[in-house]
Length: 217
Image (cartoon, rainbow, N blue to C red; front, side, top):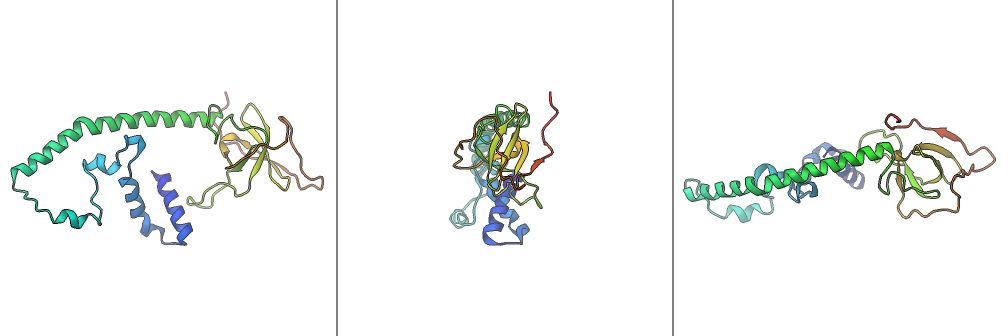
């Protein structure tokens, strides 16, 4: 949830040039709570907590015109029946689906840290010549954390360490978990196991980054 809220705030503050992000946080959080989520079997967090869909300001006038008598036993009987149906079917199914999603996320996290079995963004599917974005230190938690320039994979080791090179010829080394495949990436003509050194004028510089992986087996 935290990363989702940060992504929403980052998008809003960047496009609208807003600095008072804290004033918009409740609305971003409300959007998250009101949205249906696949991990919750297409129910919203709000629905699972209160057993009903949220009443939005635009819908309030339509609901308030209806007269509801809290002294009528039939009103409370309808509420009790709705809650009973919710507890019997909706809540158990959503919690079971959430447990499956949590196990899947935990497995994907372990695979990314080990550098094996990952998807197109991480793991062993990156090939020589693929273009990627490299993670960079963020000055604050609202920044994206990915470099704007593209890097080309020039060498790939079994340990998951990649040798990358940018357009000016600068080379760096980092782990596969610290890169993201660039959209529209196309393999270049560089052969497997080869590292292009760039210009002979000394622009190419090899820098070894601190690897952010777990203990090696």
